[in-house]
Amino acid sequence: MIGFSLAHKYPEIIFLGLGGYAGMLVWLVAAGVSALRRRSLPKGVQLAYLVVTVVAVLVAFVPYQIWASLGGVTVGQ
Image 1 (cartoon, rainbow, N blue to C red):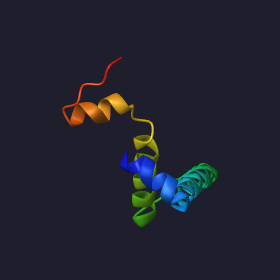
Image 2: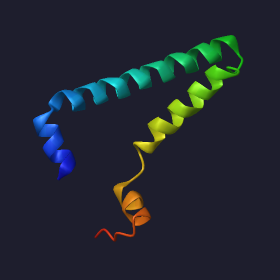
Image 3: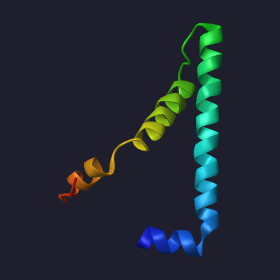
């Protein structure tokens, strides 16, 4: 309910978050295309950016049941 309340009281936070996520996806695609065109992987800080971005994108696809089980909550199927 906290997220629901915040989303309805401050919708700009939700829109900024969604915009940031979309920007992250665009950057990830652009970085992937650039790496494929150069035929080399990024090095150093750019590789760290790429890894963190991929992890952040994949976290959004983890099902709720897995997050709930980490907290010891059983979710009905």
